[in-house]
Image (cartoon, rainbow, N blue to C red; front, side, top):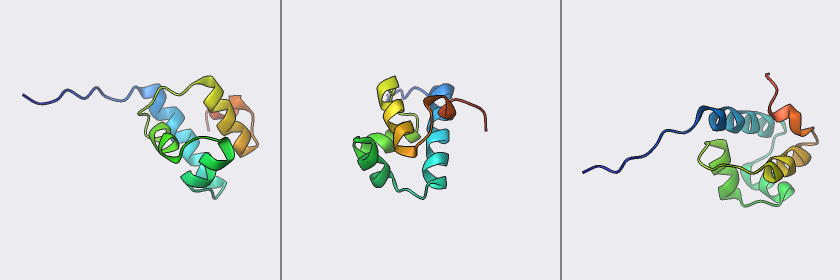
Length: 77
């Protein structure tokens, strides 16, 4: 019998893609973003892929690392 793997919720995919976009625009690696946000690089990877339910506190730390407002990660491009 196969292992059931639930699909990634759409809102996590969107947020993860926004974080990846800002990271690339900022010319940061996942490791450098993690360092600036005081998070683990593996956590940044999981967030970008929508695999974790990120806390508002962690989103705020990421936004601060980018030098943007929290709301910028949720607004449409």
